[in-house]
Image (tube, rainbow, N blue to C red; front, side, top):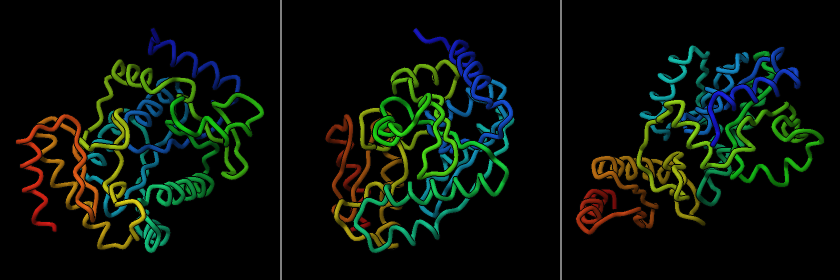
Length: 262
């Protein structure tokens, strides 16, 4: 069984060998369990870390507030950057959902934010279940935890990349990290929340009105999901309901709640 202190010590030893104690590290921090754990571990390992959170017009405000409280408690400098305009430029007119476009905007902005503000390394909360351990990291000549991928142009530190999602979950629980949940259905059975724009129907042309609809509908059903402790999201504009463990009464309440948006 992984011990939290052992993981912190391992990160400390790796960082010393890699020369990271002389670097300023910027953690791409969404406020989810993975990035929260990565930030926590690097801070506990005595590295010079700051957090960078991107948000846009359709981001969940509840999770953003939780993220701000978390970094304040850690005593970590926290930068907030609004990427609404960049996301609109990348996503509008393309087919949904917008996640791949959003990630492109965020990674590009993170790179330049880091370089323009004196940071030497980007850090992310990717774990062993994430696809990034595949083709891109095959380019790494050394340990995959610290890799300077040419397409990014800045060294990227992934302290969790050798740990499975299940191990990350246990480590985060051990550290007392309990992010705010919107009770989204998400794409996987694991807690993998993001933002409501991921529920725009595939092959649908994205436009601001559809992005607004995705936010409003899913914010409304999140209230029901939280109250009933189930996980619910609604695709738009099809209004397909996705739910883990919903009974008929819950589904009826959800249908009634979204009827006004049709």
